Image 1 (cartoon, rainbow, N blue to C red):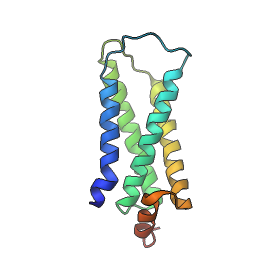
Image 2 (cartoon, rainbow, N blue to C red; image 1 turned 90 degrees about the vertical axis):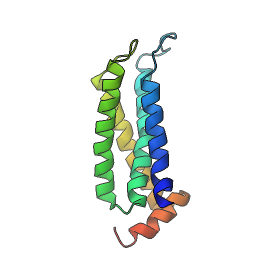
Image 3 (cartoon, rainbow, N blue to C red; image 1 turned 120 degrees about the horizontal axis):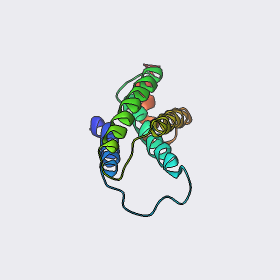
Length: 134
């Protein structure tokens, strides 16, 4: 049950990100320049926070959980950009990948902060695991 609690939200969000990236854009252009970068930051902040949480709930130390999360964000962001480069009407950008990394790092920071403050049920569950593995 702990596996599902930890990893199912990560899997669902990542599949949603890849599904959205595989869709052809045919609507009007964005109302503000670089608004897509904000979308990248927000979605990868959520993913970064969920990945950090999943690693912590799986018994990972704080530092290794943060590093594994950042590594996965880098790989998943790169895969997302490669996918978008193959979809008509979409483009791939190194700046999008940087926005993914910034968002992932923000998600890790927010997850760590929430855990330290005891915010949410996952933080209490994580504290039980981490008391012996700080």
